[in-house]
Amino acid sequence: MATTTSKTKATPSPEQIAAQQARRKAARVIGYTSWRNEWRANNPEGTPEERKAAWETARTGATQNARKLLRSLEKKGLRIVAAEPAEA
Image 1 (cartoon, rainbow, N blue to C red):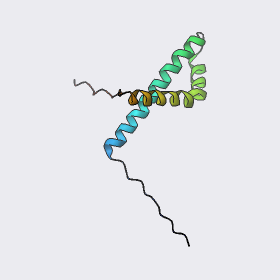
Image 2 (tube, rainbow, N blue to C red):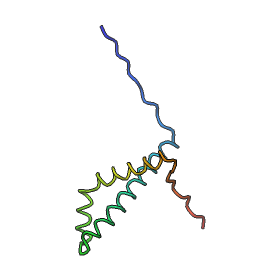
Image 3 (cartoon, rainbow, N blue to C red):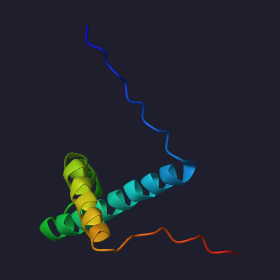
Image 4 (cartoon, rainbow, N blue to C red):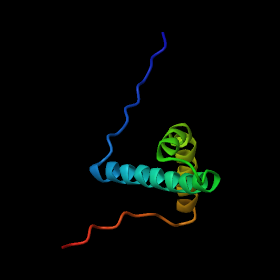
């Protein structure tokens, strides 16, 4: 009779969770901004409704490309960090 072992994942710390969320947000912003610039160049007469519909279909690919970009920058020693909010 074979025995199985289960590996439990360690729960990430609050700092790790915050870093993951910040990285995801950066990927979404980079992906959307680069996609939007290209879309506007290809569709100068496009309406906001058309842009939103086109983004829904392109979102996954654009975000994946942005994650690849972030990973490449991190391998080269560069990291994007969220700025602290300015004090009033």
